[in-house]
Amino acid sequence: MAYKVLYRKYRPQDFNSLYGQDNIKKILIDSIINDKLSHAYLFSGPRGTGKTSTAKLFAKTINCENPINGIPCNECNACKNYDQSPDIIEIDAASNNGVDEIRDLRDNAKILPTYSKYKVYIIDEVHMLSQSAWNAFLKILEEPPKHVIFILATTEIQKIPITILSRCQRFSFQRISNDIIKENILRISKEENIKITADAADYLALLADGGMRDALSLLDQLSKENQEISKDLIVETFGILTENDVEEIFKYLSQRDINAIEKIFNEYLKKGLDINLLISKIINYIYKLEIEIINGKKSIFITEDLKHLAEELIVCYNKADALNLIKIILYSYIPQNISQNISQNISQSELEESKSENISREIIDERNKTNNKLIQNNEVQKQKNISNMDKINNLKQIRLNNSFVNASKNEKEKFKKNWEIFINKEIGKNNIEILSLIEDLNIEVVSPTNVLFSHKSPSVALLFNEQTNNLEQEFNKIANYSIRFICISSSEWEEKRKEFIANKNRKYIYIEEPKEEKTSEVINSAIDIFDEKIIEIN
Image (cartoon, rainbow, N blue to C red; front, top):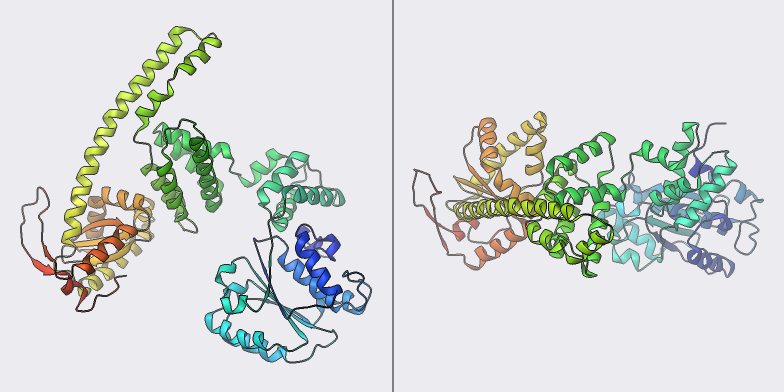
């Protein structure tokens, strides 16, 4: 017999063997016992929490010929053959999401069941249906045949139309507790003769993040190693990211040690870590830092900065080049006020603690000298950063203005064609640094001399503006098109756009950039840029 993966082999056969979701289980069993079945159910919740398994058990039980207290008998023909039953139809909406597939479903649903009491449609990942498919599905959901029951499963309930939600009984599946997952891992390991330590089972439960299927998939993969599964083996096999790793990132951030952070990220790249997991870990760590600061713990990080950092990291989710984007965002949040906080942290309590540990006065003095030197170096660096920021902000205001001088839709279309050439060439060259900056830029306004971009992340916009000279040179080489760039955050663009609309007749005069020999004065109005009707700029 062909090998069956563990999560399929140990899929629950009745409600008694279904782990977690006790409240949902009780309601469904009671509805079966009291014969109060709805025509449509919606199961929502994280992946691997039992939505599809529960749907199959429910379908099996309602068609069982001799159920006992809401539990299938497993002896009748309906129970024995429910896996191959033509009356239990599973549909993957991810690959069958068109209106034609739903019309076929609607037509077939009218046909009576072949062997069973009910024809049950289990539609997985139902949020993937197209709008036209939803419209076609709504008709049969409004007037379903008596012999049909729909069970819809989704991980993204927010994408389900309200007209569908209002016609279903909704059940929200929760993440399964680590204790239940660990217990199941140890039980299955015993049955399969898999050697595993208790702390490894704990760690697998933690990595599964509330998903039983994920836990069993990990166990299945590790069982092929032909050795006892330990925590060290798990870390070695999957290149797991721990909280200590994230702590190291923030430690080096506070020390402005970019090389050390680069080394850590290169290791992540080698291990092929899940970048979304890295983002989640960093955000969780930020939350922990914020709580500590609120509770009075001194930190070189500022709460407001940490909030903005978390918001910007969310932008990195599901990005192809997220690792480099994360680095850019983190570097832009290197604490500027580190010197002040270092001096605050050299407190009397530390001196007393040092004395109690019999550390000599010479060592303490040496540490203070080191800290004072670090303070002086950081003050110098801080002044350099302020000076640099002033230059960038000044340049930004000039180029922001110049982007609107003689700007037009024709200029924008012309630039877009050259921009596509540039991006395609850069992708071909795999220039990671440039790609990290230009990915997801929006072209907002284009004049004959300037381009105004926007980006969701203020940090990426800032880093882009620091690199405009290099980017312009690269662009000119590839597209043979000389033009100047500037980038602002998406939120700032919205403010500027509202300002332009409110002052439609404002005149824009070309401003010469510092150390430029060329001067010209070209006057144009916002109404010429946007046409007589104010248009949306993509």
